[in-house]
Length: 394
Image 1: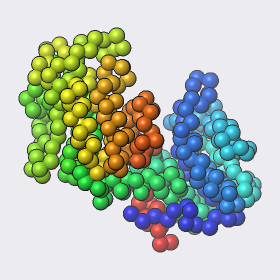
Image 2: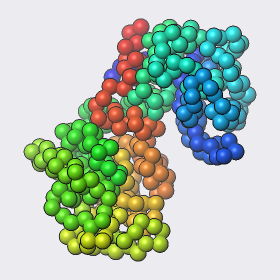
Image 3: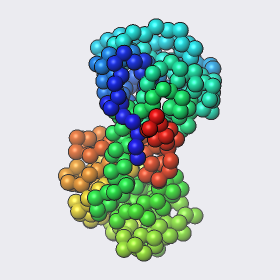
Image 4: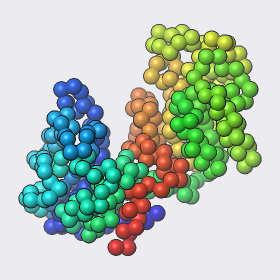
């Protein structure tokens, strides 16, 4: 996968347009409650400023109606926070599509919520051309939106004089390529979550590639059903038992495996006060809910991870938000942290688990993209990255 990268370009004196992902959570008063995405965007911004570029940044925020931005849709709080982090003022430009605003080398401005522009979501070509005319260099640093073909993610990349990947985007592409194109073996994938249906495509894709496919959460319960086990009142999708069995058969035909729980942690409800019981997987009662893997299973999974060459992690193996159901995910997280394998992790629940168990520094690469992370692993073409690939020689 070949794309131009920001650090390969001379941006001195150039007008640089950066599409970042600054879609951060805010409280009811408009205060930013978590600024990881803003911090992740700073390396590309700072690099351009240090090289003497005039820097324009835009992002989406929330889901505004195109052409009707309200006060809650404004990037003003982001401009303030970004200014604090880079220690310089960041002006917010409201009506920017037609240009007309001044920006000097070494300055940075934030262009108001790009999804307020009519035609952004539908990747309107005329809108993309107007955006492209604003800059000398277009930088896509928003991996989290790379699976969407929008004017600021795909269209502008086709028409800007130069189009490249930012530092964050470049790192995402490199890490995901390392994990999927020629991975060190054994390749172990961990896919957790509530529903098989939401991750069916990725499970099928991985079943054709990985050496071990660890499933967790409601997904594992559906696989347990497929193997003939009783799961009581556990979350599962009985209508997808045949799909789960087909995935296990695919793995078995390749000499690979889907290791299923041999013991589980059950309760009669999902709550912080629920009483957890550890039982063999064969002894699940009619009213039990499986909410975590048991210690024997956790140890088995940890051993698989310890011998891995590459680890791809998306989703916990239990309801780790509650302490009594966190043991399996905690042991798995610790095993990944201590593994010498290259590890890449992505997805909201996965990032929450990484933060809870304080292992961020021990993961090879933490992806900032949710849907984009999964679609890349599925082998899908991400429109924003494809647009950058198409501009590699131009």
